[in-house]
Image (cartoon, rainbow over all chains, first blue to last red; front, side, top):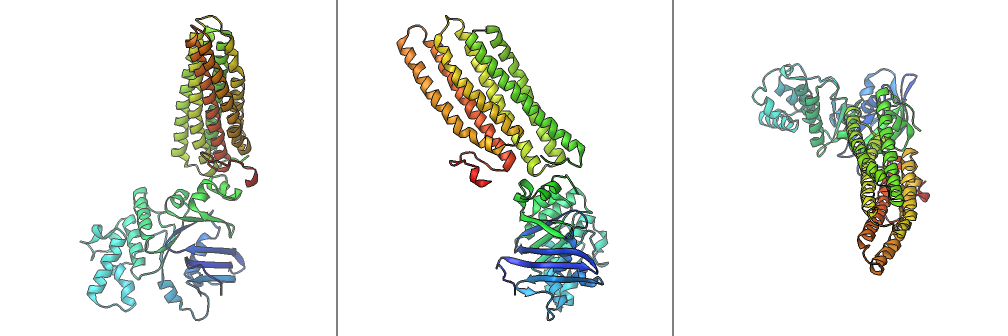
Length: 257
Length: 230
C-alpha cells in the first residue's frame, strides 16, 4: 500500500490511464492536500478532466477506459480495489460540471433528493439539510421563499450554486469541479469563486479550469498538465510568479496553448 | 531569451515598456554626466540645460507607470512578464530620483560658479566615476536580465560609500582651513552626498534586476552571493 501523508486527501501513484488504445495519462504522481483548493490547468486534451473523473471513477462509464498502471488512493484506500463500493465512493465526492445540471424538479427537491435516497425520510431533517446546503452555497436568501419552484427558474449562476449545494447535501469530503464558471457571467463567476473560497474550510476541492486568472485567484496549489503528463505542480503563487519549468512559463504567459 | 507571445500586442507592449525604461536610463545618466561637466567646467548654460531636461525624465516616469498599468489591466501578465512590469515601474522611480540628484548637482554647480574657481572641485571626479559605473552596470543588468551583475552592485557600492566618507571629511576640514568659501564647500559636500545616493539608487536598480531575472528579493539581505544558488 502506498504510504500517505496524513494531510493528503487523494494520492495518485504513478498512474497511467487509457481510453482503449489511446493513452490519456502517463506516470501521474501527485498528492491533493486536504482542505485546500487545487487547480488543474493545461491546454485542451492534456488530461486534466480525465484525471478529475478518475477520482470518482466516472470514467468507468466510458467503454474501454481504464487505469493501466498505478492507481489512486483516497484516505489510504485503493479506490480500484475489488471490495470498493463505487456508489459509496461517489457519494463521498461531490461533482460540479461546466454546464449546470439541476434536476427537473423543485429547488427543494434538488437538494433533498440525495439525502432521501440515502434513507433520510424525516421532514425536519431534510428541511434542515436543504437550508444548511443552500446557506453554504450562498443561495438561501435568494431562494428561501421559492423552494417549491422549479430549479429551471433560477439564473445560470444561481443554478450552478444550486448544483454546488446539491453536491454538499450528502456530506462529501471532496468536491470535484470541472470548469464550473465557464458558462457564467463575470458577476456570477465572482460569486461562485467566493463560495469556493468559503467552502475550503470544510471540503477538499479540485477545480479544472481554462481560466488562469481564476486558478491564480482561488487555488492554493496548481498542477499544470500537458499531453497527458503532469509537468509541474506547486504552490499557486510559485507557479504564476516564478514557475520552475520553461514549458509551464510558456503556457501561463501565453506563449503557447 | 523567451519566445514570442501568441498575442502580438503583448510582445509589442512589453517591448515599448522596456524601451522607455532604457530611454529614461540614458536620459538620467546623460543628465548626471552633464551636471558634473557643468560643475567641473563652471558652465552655467550647461547646468541650466540639465535643470530644464529633468522634465523629460519626469514625463518618462509617468509614461512608464501608465504603460505598466495598461499591461497589467489588459494582459494579466504572469511570471517573467509580471516581474518585467513591476521591476520596470520600480526602476523608473529610481531613475527619476537619480535625475533629481543630477538637477540638484547642476543647481549647486551654478552657485559655485558665482565665486572664484575652487581646486577641490576635482575631488568629486572619482566619486562620479564610481557612481556612473554602478549606474551603467545596473542598466545592463536590467537590459540583459543579468542577476549576477545586478547582485554585485551592492558590494561595489560600499567602495563609493567609503570614498564618500573620505572626501566629505576632507571637504569638511577645508571649511575649517579656509575663510569665506564655506558655502561653496558645503555645496561640494552635498554634491558628494548626491553621488553617494546615486550609488544607492543604482544598487536598487540592480536588486530590481535580480528580481526580474530570478524572482529573488535581495533587499535588506546580508549575504547576497548568488554564486552557490545557480
